[in-house]
Image: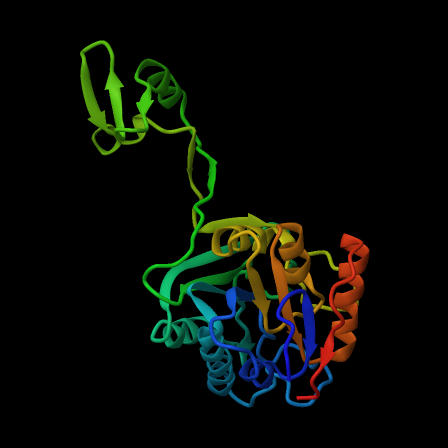
Length: 291
């Protein structure tokens, strides 16, 4: 069966659908898989209802191993994963998954998504959980990555020093015009700070306030940075657990193509409606592979 790889939602089991797709056909994959023992989406064969967390992690590793085959040589994988409790015991799912995937991919970053508006938890014997992980992997040592910057937090002393001793970006040195000397940033420490810096790995982003019938949507802001960083303009972004379609919407807004896989036909329809209402755009007809 011919698979349309651009702007398509495929209904079916993620692993089985991935097996039908051609090698090195996507630029990046970003997803948030169903969390273990959190919700029943009412579809046979769904990931997340395994008897043990180890079985759950193994299922995910199968999916992401198949995705590695689909990634172009310079492709990247981004996985948003949360944690869960069982008999008051916090699972080690994020760490177990990261450990196993790091033997398959190059593990580049562990990003903390700090939920600026996290929900309160009715507990009195532990702290409220207010973050999730976003893991960043690459297929190979060399991969596509567009660095992004954020404003630096500068002290008044740093601002004064930047005005006195301008930073020469071509030489990566600070020029002391008074004494005629040049110093590296490391030599001067944080007294000399550029106006912008590389984005750090703790991202404070509000949780998504979903207006659709789906309980586990992630916010658009969380995946805007990874898509800009990990997929070139005109590239293809894959989400094997598409849900309500956030990945597809953000990919289209940022000038990328999307490919989504969703097991639940109801959610696939929600995603399609979201795309149409948000973008005023009707993509290629979605396919139901029945697998």
